[in-house]
Length: 374
Image (cartoon, one colour):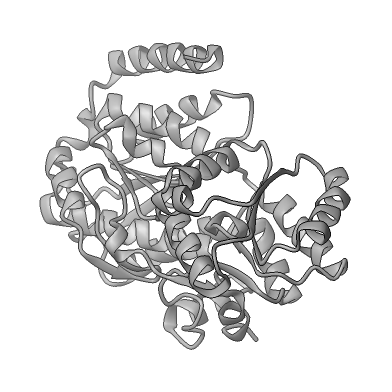
């Protein structure tokens, strides 16, 4: 185990021992408290990121408007994971034992999601990931963990199948960087049967903008039919712009991570041609829906995928809690039986908490995204 992981685990154990001495395992949720509000915890990577938080807040507002959760108002406690590595454990423990949240939602990258998952496992508090696509989260076999996002294995298979069907499988390239989520996505892609049968003709590591020109040179020499791009979101967008500016117009496939809040509005305004990613329900095309219109009135812009996934995560948790009050075991059981149709499509979970691949949307062109916005 890496030294940083050992330090994080030791830090987590110390925090939990301290918290348990005052409260006990999920004791605060074990008895209903009449009309007291019910708190859910939302963890975000950066306090400046607002889209996902807005999506979660919108869901809470809608639930309270229709009477709350079994007659009790729902409140959202938000914590940012900013700070030194491992601070996420402290923030999550604070949500559970100080804020007394009933469940956790994460709009996080893979590494921070693992920290939250560890707290969920130790405290028996359900945790729904609403953004991380890291498949190793479910492979930790934590029964409190669920993900409403197709993981990178599912995304990778869908992307390759679409690429091979439309572009052929004999000449395509894989471009990535050293970001943690990118490395996980690449490994997931390379482990698929689809990749094993038709591997990339070239693999290129794009560690900085200094590599962009070398990539263009290689593309002109090899003349690939398509590229699969797995880099940190902002670097991916910068690279796509550079390629198009250099006249490289081949189709580019990428995961949902490309639609991160920091990129979303730029992607819409740039209207990049021949860009493909995983579709996700109706949020792209239901511009006239109450969700989109009220979101726009409330926050001044249209919702992107982070808002839609956060909205669905809150709705799923509320349904599970509403059925059995505060019993954590029954809440987990209800989550495992989820059959929900939301803004990101149909959501069901497999035995490990993954979003079932049978409900994974297909690959769509960014043109659908642009067509849904003014």
